[in-house]
Length: 125
Figure 1 (cartoon, helix red, strand yellow):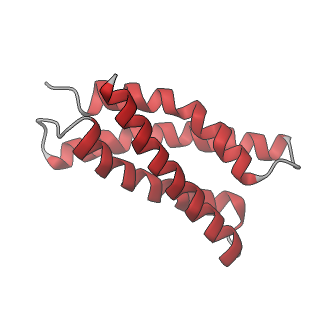
Figure 2: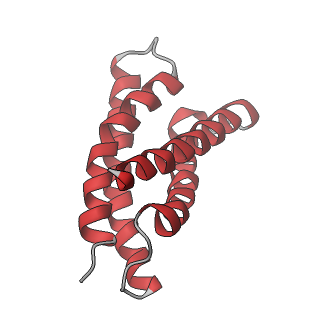
């Protein structure tokens, strides 16, 4: 249960980074909601890796490179699910605000992320 709470905290921090970067890029650049979201997801993934590695799951027994690759693999897969749902929502519901679509998509990918990180990345060998 402790790991799940810490994972939720890491996810909350990642969510704030994701939302902040997305909002900033939408207001300060001409990127638009689809390209801005890619940059926002990348920033959030970097922040959550650091938090998850230090506080949620602890370091794995694998090398930093292997752990990083595994984290990235799970993270990219979760990000594709997240981005796919985000895009589908915006395309099918044009009146939906990008941040609302981001919330829905982020919640949907959270369960996948937790199991992927806890079973594939940080699980002891």
